[in-house]
Length: 204
Image (tube, rainbow, N blue to C red; front, side):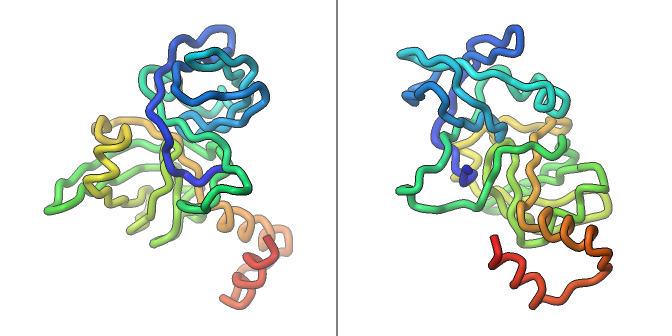
């Protein structure tokens, strides 16, 4: 499990035969789970200045190669002793989004992110979403996109500062929204009360 708080901007050294080699200050151990741009991967070899990770077929079928090149967001898996911040992130990419609009405001920048419409039911206004491994808050949801407002600190400390119109992003939607939709679909229910939602969330 992850929190969506980026611990380091690392660098991809190479990507060959499904093996991703990362240069990093983080001292990883064999078997560790590490999120790279929001993708949960397992360390298969560790070095003094980085580590190797292996990408499964399922992962490669979803992500774009641009997400495993150059600089990348890095977050080690959360430990039980850690302070919990951000939100619950699994490191399982649901889909690829694309930046369609960027609007500079007085003390923030708005980003409009387009996604396939089937994923919008898991994206909730004022709810949480993970973009390239970063825990963010959704401001508005539209017919085929959603809006994020990014403050200067987040721009400075993450690779969002490099985003442009057309940049593709790893998207992980809200865990609870996915679970609730799955439960309702298999119950054959079309509506749900807030008491039902509270009960479902408390069971996780």
